[in-house]
Image 1: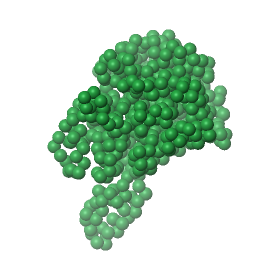
Image 2: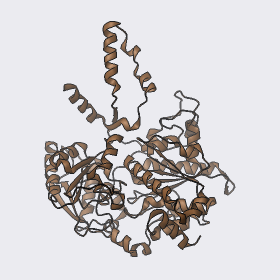
Image 3: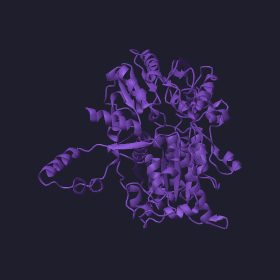
Image 4: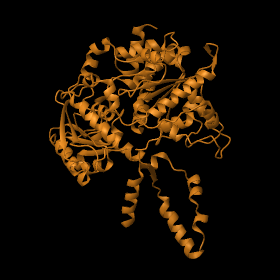
Length: 562
């Protein structure tokens, strides 16, 4: 297949011509190189990283022997998983175009499944494993299945799904810097497969292939240093001269710093007031203003002080139901590219505000006109900057960063505070220019030192993989630890989490128990053991809210008092 043929198929699938880096990736996919799949794609935000899926789809149709049959797209943000699923659905719909009949016939169909929260697994991908498939999911849902411990599936299905996800698969780990432990894990799985599956110098069956995808790379994939250097795909000089690429990586983002005396005093009142004042500075001019704060409590205080009907909040504590309602809201629609908005809906013309924690930093396909935020670590700040003027359409975009004069509390500085201090020093080197091109010019080692602290990454081994694979042994077994710490690592600074679920039936259970206590004097726990109730009526992911345990406790105490 020649280059123009790929460009035609890509344009028919996506609605626009490919960037040079996308053509380069396709050429590498269908090449005869042993390392035809890059270990890492280091591409700035706003340049179509998600369309790796379209490139894989075309390569699969044209060169089936060189590309894995299934693509697993993993990103640890549920909103992004949903948006990616929608994009793949659009690709499948576009495959019906007459000009793509040849590609459609070569593929023979495409299964699409989502392994995350609110969507139940439609089992398209596992019902017919010979069929090309795209599986979108979170680290927990994909990682647990890879390690034979699939959440919310029976023990008989676990080895099947581990096999389907671990063989003949291209696993694309989007925003890999967020989950270094998971990146290390999947690299270890791929390496172990190669060791077990090599006869002389030839691989005897299709293994797991891994590609990291990040605009904010923490480090390169941990393979051989020389190999990884040559197998990282980034922007070429041709990309940088492309008019659309140039416009996006050099987009106007004027950076201003606003110091506050102490963000820890008075429940961050000064921080909140400064952020609100700067956000309201764009009031009544019809702009979309994005606000970031790293604490849920601060987000809630900010939301209270902004116009009620023009403000929405996005945090990791939202249930699937609230998240779906948020994405459909008129305020949120204003932050979407025009092509993704509901064309039948009249959007508000006044200034609107979206207030987020880190849940809005990564991958969400939004673009604001202006940004106001507190100070976080460098990786978070780069992601925040990437959510404003993403396509370079504005020439007056402003970013206001509210930061403390001093770091730490009671004379003590945490590791995270030290990383934030380094981040502030780096950002001040930008001289007011927060474009992707300017960020890229900062010293790479200094950037990595200002990233959020990395969790402890637990080592794996062939013995561990064998122990996890013994799914018929359902009891606790020595030498078979829980899989969760291997997915996310162990972090001393990350506080414990609690999940809460709402059930309408709770009131009915309480009523029945009260009647039985009064009439029969039964043992409540024996009559209604919680474990039996949950097995009969299992909790569904979209019913669950996840938050820090201390915040959950405070809320429950407040509810009890009421």
